[in-house]
Image 1 (tube, rainbow, N blue to C red):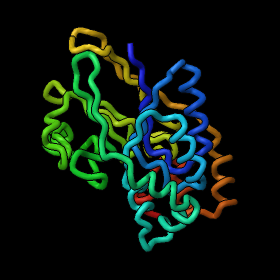
Image 2: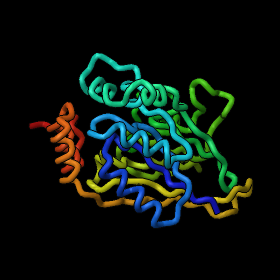
Image 3: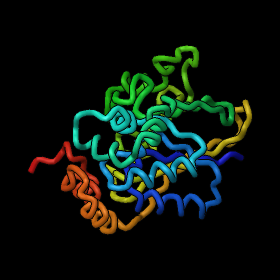
Length: 244
């Protein structure tokens, strides 16, 4: 049986990423796929990018990876870009939009945010039509057709839903979870077979890590939007929802 760790949205949080990698290895998992947003928000973009390249078999592009790579006129992006350097930025810019595989007779597609765009945000409570559109082929690859299973990141909310016989899941976030303060990832299991009667499984894993250690690292690095980043780490509440 194939067993694949699905990670996403590390966001430069090396403390959480190392904790998740330790958990993955303790379970004997050899394959790791990353759904993007390696960088952004957190203080260690260089270390995270280098370790992802070393450990992940497949990596796709997230919205922060794209924005940092094109070096927008915004300190949240330029701070990251200056540390990453040209070669790592070129790597982020070159990452593919999606990845597709077959397990236990199911076509599984992995994207960062949606098949439409790395910026097209889909939440578990959105209208059914918007969630069903997640199974569509990527906008630039219509020949891929409709998927049976879609996994994504972006919204930092881990969840699983079944709709019209299809399965939609979000792996949550390793470095910036916004549903619960422990790092999140998934384990996908299935057979290299076209037979749908073979076992197929998705497991959600939450990994505790030293949040206050990450807070100290971020303070020392003086990352942009520091207070927002620390509050998100400590509370799991998205900065856009803050009212005070």
